[in-house]
Image 1 (spheres, rainbow, N blue to C red):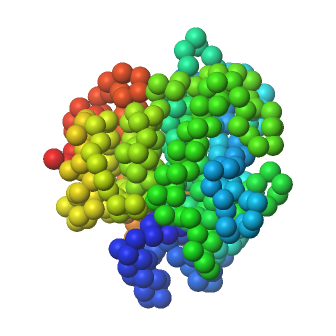
Image 2: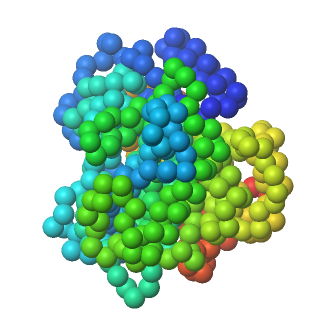
Length: 406
């Protein structure tokens, strides 16, 4: 469940259209319009049934641990003198003996409540889904270090918004580091502070700022790989995490503005060996410069090369392995947890099928979940582990909605 898709002029236009549809009583995504106006006052509160996420399909249980990070190279003018860019991140990884450890919530409780209050669904506060990640479980060590994938969320979203994808990668042997981009996200700090998107003044939330966050977190990954704990509070990390990450096999992916940030960071930082954008608008800030000779994949929905010059321009700068796919019927929010959660919300509130499709598109939700589990995994398996995957070879009867764009 996400908030505003992007900060572009085109994204703002779409948001205005969604607002007009809301006034007319049409269906709009839960988090496309902030504020209580989206809650249906004539609908009774849902029954107390916890929302659920599909389990990952990999052979390994999943562990997770949080990191509290501060980038002392970037002063934070919003926080005031003496403060620097502050981020929360989470590492997801293949684990062992995981059942002895508690599972992580989809979002921290305080952040989840703030998020739901913003979109007018506070009555769902007790129904937040749980993940497959076991907090603090030991890292599974196989004699080889783990390939690493960084994840960047979209505008006014949160680092758990693509948990289905993240825990799928971890269950198949990747370490995934999800980032909460301060001032454009909902998150919770160890001292209890709740962070929400900043709306009343300019903030470092452009794609270039997100990309700088990605590169800083890469520095922290290097510390973890070297056996050092980058957490500013020096909290205990999961057993086996230090020294377990492979700096020669690093990838990045992101959704919407995070997809654009992934492109920016991949262009700027050769440590990123492969990048994947989930419907990124590709409106670069700073402007696009130079070519990219490393593998890059685009999963398109609303921002296609046929309709968006920025996406087409970015594609023209790709000189290495490249792939652009589109799931027919997918909306901008389709490549994420929305496809698993919205049908449950629709059932709780008694939405019609038409209203649900207005939120998440006409792509079958079960097929959408399988697509987001299969294609990113195949991409990173091929380009970080040299394990070619059939889904990337061409159209497949297992995924009839997926089109390979020329």
